[in-house]
Amino acid sequence: MLVVPLIMASMTVGISRLGDIRRVGGIGSKTIIYYMTTTALSVIVGITLVNLVQPGSADTEEERIALRGGELMADTPYQVEGRTITLNTPGLGRIYDERYMVILSDQENIRGVVERITGTDLPRITVKQWENANGEQIQPNATGQGLRIDLAIVEKVKGKSRSVGVVLRNVVVGLIPSNLFKAMANNEVLPLIIFSLLLGGVLTTLGKTGKPVIKVFVGLNDAIMKIVQLLMLTAPLGIGALIAGRLGDAGGFSGFGPELIRLGKYAGTVIIGLSIHGMIVLPLILRFFGQQNVRRYTLNTAPALTTAFSTASSAATIPLTMECVTSGSGVSKRTASFVLPLGATINMDGTALYEAVAAIFIAQIYGIDLTSVQMVVIFLTATLAAIGAAGIPEAGLVTMVIVLQAVNLPIEGISLILVIDWFLDRCRTTVNVWGDAVGAAVVDTLEGRKLQTE
Image (tube, rainbow, N blue to C red; front, side, top):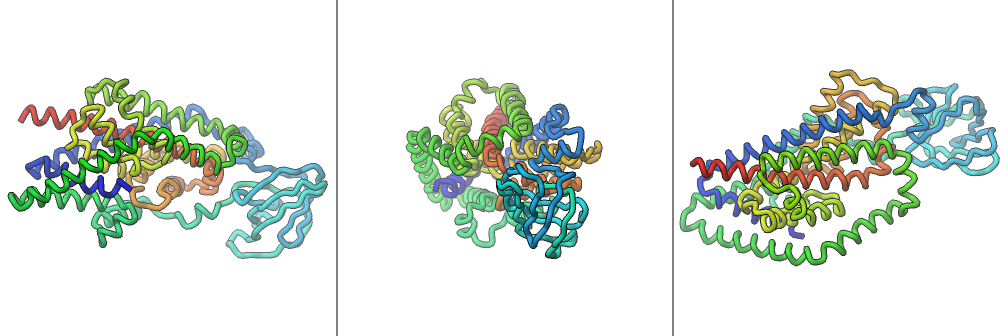
């Protein structure tokens, strides 16, 4: 409710407070350099860690398939009738779903999406759709021996293919909204930022005519921040309810726990990487470049970080983040109103780290050895794709496909990590918001030094 009016009011007021419009270039360049640097550092942390831990490594193809959640049945006889396979081996009762596909060993070009394996004496796999390597539907009726159940491309991933260039081009084109009110309704933050910057800059050039309009935006901005303070009173209850509701959707601990344990090494690698970046790299930057007491600044920002974890949205956390860094930590409203909305759009430290780890993990579970050149490509695409994710539906999913395709990795691997993605999404969003908050302190300190020298 508060994101759109707060962004427009705070950005307009922030630019008008700069006075000389030429100051925008200085604060803008510092902000962009900070965001690019911290995003690159997060990707380096992720790539280094996943190569050290090797969460997806296995010695044999059978072990790799098992790690992916599938099963290799090399000696199992089967009989195919229509879209149903009967396994002539009693006692198999494992349950699969639409994330997996069955591949017949003696008919390698035939595959299909698995729906379930029943728990009868002779288990039956019901296949939603058979197709050959060209994607054409066929109806096999055969008997044979040996099949593999492996990851399939889930529907959520299909159609997400696009290049980094296309994503960045769409972001650049989307900077100017064709319809301002449509941008508001769709929560398209970046075009609203551009419009607000333009409006605030023009108002400073109108002299007496512009002053009353600026005062209206100042009043609106102050009123919204008061509403934010009221919302903070209910934040603990709301945050608890949001997390409990999402965990319930995942089947509670009994439904989510086994998947988390099965992917524990991968999830642990992501969380450790996020922790290193969030608890070591960013605090060091905050201490030496932002000149803030790390412990006090972290405590002041805690309400925004917990809200980021519960909502999994950097944009939805903007009002609270702004309140925390200005009222609690002394960052100027002028800097916060510029740095934080922009950061929620283009600063994705946690997302970039996560995508680099996930891409290399997927390569490991498929037994693909990545060259140093491919590692560099992952570094570049994870950094650029995270920045270009603004305004894209299911942004993390789109950018993950981009990173995988850049180094020709199978996008089927996304099907595996999607199961716990909702949880890791909250972790990386928290780091994203923490990076924004640290950025506000750093840029504010640098701008303060510049004003002193002037």
